[in-house]
Image (tube, rainbow, N blue to C red; front, side):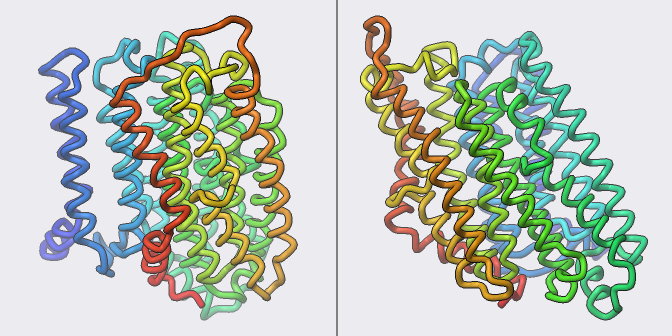
Length: 491
């Protein structure tokens, strides 16, 4: 037993580094007792060290801690995504006036690292209990971060709404897991698959109910309709860097565990048909795209617009899951890679605008493209990428999503690709609306040019360049996605 624990710990180094980094950050915060970049620097060093050990796990395939966690390329891909996004968020916080005016000191640093640690565990979980615990770890830190600006009523309101919706969805998901356990007598998703494969499914309503309930928990985390009601208010009330963190890292963590649960536990055509999982995913996907895109059209707040955009983007990603084969999963991984750069970029430009204007209302951004051409052009890059315009990484993601739908024949899902394409056309309207305010609308009075500084320009370029580069040369993303999904053994 002792040898098994030591073996597990020796392969748990990336997570251990993050935990140690959190402790060091807390001690440093207690010693310094004021806002300091030193605490953030410690966090960055910890993330870089964790990155090194995560890369070393590439190519491994094993389970640790009595089958609670898996180490494989799929988990490694998401851990790398979490590290990159967390590094950017820490930089975002340092440039955000919202976070600098907060009464807290450096608490956000170790809260962000705690969420990242929970996301690590979500990506590796192969046991229902571990999935639930890791999801709660991510959720609890998210609640605190959403209400980080305790003197701002909107931030407090966002945290309360987040807690209420989160508690309800977690309870529903936990009950669904008990139904699965009661039916299969196991919590391990590999063993669940073996049981459902070898035994005839005699109680379909129970399994269907459990699938819907568990989908509710995951759907809340990825902002999927009809579990999306918290998203606009929380995104609007939370500080913008935290909103970006929830939109990218938290959502990606939700997709990581959702994919592993369904494609490992139900990776069999007969099981999928019996529990109607594909139909459930299709309904959630279409609803997310339609509601996200059409409600975003009417938004005047850039943060709320990006919130509904995130809901719609989760719908596009779910399209890939509706295709139960390697092409669909490949497209999901590829799209999440693209989503990292274009969504973080859009939120960072929003931070820079908010720093100068003190608002995210698009009516106040009239003429901004001429007052600050760099910000206007880079925002155009991110908006076009989110809309799926060619020569951007967003186009590559959607192209492979739609291709997976068109090329599958069991059943024919070409009609679903058409629905996704039409929704992309709708989304182009509100993405272009942002640019219309920046470049076509004239401000009521002449305003001076806005200077954002070299550091901010560099961070923006670190997101804008990959958005264009991977839209033109996307082979590295294709190889990464291809190697990440081999563990599932899909056709």
